[in-house]
Image 1 (tube, rainbow, N blue to C red):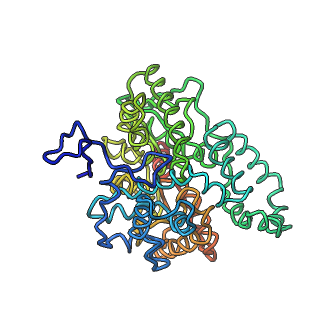
Image 2 (image 1 turned 90 degrees about the horizontal axis):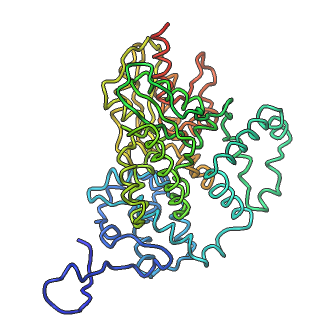
Image 3 (image 1 turned 90 degrees about the vertical axis):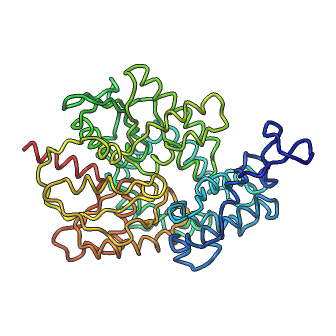
Length: 477
């Protein structure tokens, strides 16, 4: 029960029309979490072994329980907003939310750390002390100019593709230009490692058709919309294309609103909640306009786990916005991961054989945030010829976690190395997942681990929907 204060100060039964919730003194710039949410942890420790950073360090301060203690201490006004240890330990969290799966008390850890980081990022003393100029500029570019603005992201994608295919990338790496001491002096010492993580940019990029509608190829039963996302449209356009083909083979007209933008997940997870809310409002408007044009949508389909988690939480994100709260809740109620949607209908089983040994990596924001584990496996097992080999610790984070592999590169690589050991154990020739961050991270892991050395059949990383798409194509031959 939330702690309430009786405004009158009189003894006796509380009049619930005369009470107001406790506001934590540490939250002075933003709306803080509720008292009930912040105090729900019972300190049982069941979360510890599910936390990647605790398993790596063995430190209580790098565990969910330890971070919750720090967040509550800050919320109660007993820890300064610019305390360096507070930032160090909170920023080392991957926000994978594996602790939520393990928690018997229903602690909303993801919600709490997002709200705390949002408060910290609004505090002027934090902004002044914690980042240098290069990091501030990089943050502004990424969170305000790149991901929220599709036209800028597309230009960046095209420029990156030119860099990759013109020979500039080869020359830059050969000369070691990104490993010069100057990068370290301006706070970008890891830029060479980060450049090595860049995935091949798709050609062409994914774009919505002018009509915004792709009709079903089988008898139409559903009308769905595709949330095409930012990274998927630029770096993994083939996955969006495969998603559309799979949906149209599964009795669905597919609406792709041109006005949609990034879901805002990266902003929300990194303490830029205000701008994340603006992005959510924009997307709600875009999909409502699509519904007005094409008719009611049965589902809003997403093929990126991290995006799906945030889209399903739009109601919570806009809970204090009277103009959008109910609209956000309606939007969120229609969001379905592609695997969740297909496994929830009588999906088309006209597959051809696909002779592959596949292991599946559970994306954190699919299995922990959305609690979706069985549907992807149901779909994979339905493909003739495909052998699914379960990976040990498939539900453990790969270390990608949005931009964590950029901001916390060393810890990210430690976690990735463990994941690649598990991949190697399976002997599978294909690793499937349902999230672009995992996809890119696992591709890097294959290179780092030398997994493809001395193998006749290289290990490939694919999205689940690509396997379904190939199986349907094989069925038509």
